[in-house]
Image (cartoon, rainbow, N blue to C red):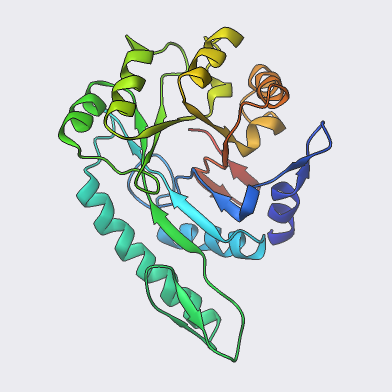
Length: 249
């Protein structure tokens, strides 16, 4: 199975460039167990992180959903994250006896090994709905690296006053990162161009290019790549199966 994922993480794109996670960083996944529609079993989450290690990934941002249907509280997510991170570092230490798991950035290797654990971080994928607007007003958010907010919309239609809401996010001192814009088939090229002109960053789902979400999304993904509009890449992983990845979400 490790070989399967290594091949996917380094898949060649039609343009000839590498379909991979740049700098070994996954900026979007639902691996944190039991908090949304993603991974539920902590043992599967640990298995996925071992696969990441074997595939050369070095840094992972957990981005659980926060939306009206999944109204996660940031404080609750922080507690779950710290508990799971401790489990992961213990698992890593057991698999690498020559290293010592410590600190927020993971293990500090001894002279006996140069293996290092993944750097794990917590943020959120925020649906732009009424709950988000309340959280934004209250400052009750989970940003990436303190200044970025991963946001999404319905795949069918944008929220009312979409660009105005994005501007309010910017006025709060955050830079919006629009998750998987290739999936918003309601958008036209001029819509993407207007968002980029507004200073919005785009995050591509790694497997959109493989047709994971259908031919239309795959085609749109290729167009956005051609237009050089992407800034970040994430897997958007939701679950692990014996047959490979299922990245619905």
